[in-house]
Amino acid sequence: MGLIVRKTKKTLGFQEGKPTVYKLQNVIFPQVTSDQLIEECSISCGVNPSQTKAVISALLDRLVHYMVIGHGVRLESFGSFSPKIRVKCVKTEEEATVETVQQKYIRFTPGKKFRTMLNDLTVETARN
Image 1 (cartoon, rainbow, N blue to C red):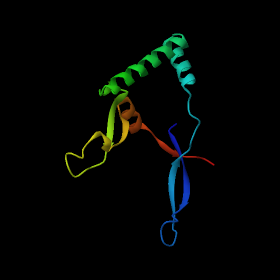
Image 2 (cartoon, rainbow, N blue to C red; image 1 turned 120 degrees about the vertical axis):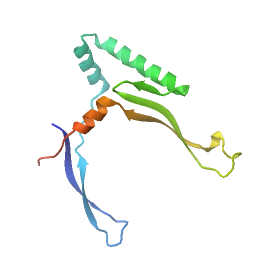
Image 3 (cartoon, rainbow, N blue to C red; image 1 turned 180 degrees about the horizontal axis):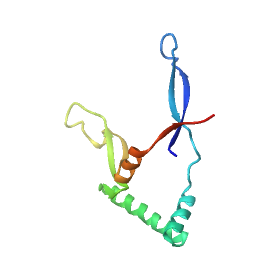
């Protein structure tokens, strides 16, 4: 089974004549919780769920630690995380200060496993 989509109708109220357009949209399923994921991982690895939770918590702590000091972190086939900023462009060198930082964010670049999954992902229309 792949990604399930449905057709949606939208009226473009901002355009003259208010044309109607159609597009495909993901069918939204409930999110898997961290507790569900931890339970499944612990069963798969044959370890206690509290140990699995501790490992994941430690991994997240280390990711944050390294990104706070400016490092990107690559998790092999999972992907890479890098701290980034968006800044306001200014006309002079003197104006280019930390006050021009408009947003801080984390860039995630999918690794091989996710890229392969996306390439192989099928899309099918929902049955009504």
